[in-house]
Length: 386
Image (tube, rainbow, N blue to C red; front, side):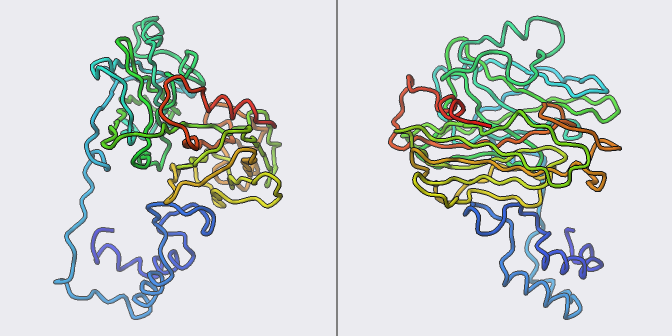
């Protein structure tokens, strides 16, 4: 709706939607996490819209109109410093989900960099389920890519090679996301060696028609000195089975930060698939039984996902428990249920499977830049229990 003429016929529906806080979309529950760039309306803004509608939705003075909005097909956060794109388009097979990795050299950078942000431009949003970008400092992905003449290589799950301190997840994208940026003074490490590459892992979901894709990932270099590395942690349960017909099935996972490891949480990206109903992440301090809410999305929508960045990093001291709670609706009443009739659904990488996952971007309290620092992701993952 770009004009008064567009909006006027929908005035009553607009009022009802904003009063119910259904529009504009903002998934996190109020009071659980203080996030940047919230699209939620204040009560005063809601009252203004409702009063306008109750007054008959008058047009007002055309001289007061702001300049028209433009929506260019480009990078919404500005032109990246480095854009990596596969050389060719790829057409996945129909009838099944496809995981394909594309290996792209970055040795032209002549030295490792710290990133302030990572963004993704999906080439074909009809089929792109999610995107992960990995740093491959050793160049292992080049040999994998050379195994056949088809662009990229098959990489169900991870990138096809072992991740270590110099081969990490640089960023993630899912429908609704709009890039991830970390605060000044922190950075996401992009390791660059003479053989270094970036691997773009694509998850494609079929539409029934032949579709091609060529997705780009954009990197924004840190402009200020980076004092702390921003790590990506994963809190995930991969051993559950949601019964057919279950309307409120709960899956949990938790991890305890080991002694001496305290974190400052920069952002959180929850992730489920089509049966998802609610997802929440919270932490409990040592010697306490009262959880502190990090994010709660009570009305999960697969098509509206994001990395939610905190206005102020959240301190999570060593010994704290971090807990993920995911709730699913596997009944016939769920309009997004891909199975009719419903059938048991467990963890899996395909869209019609399910996940219970939260990515956590964090720095280590007191950690200085140290190339030989242990992998914080492994430390936390090793302490997680079902």
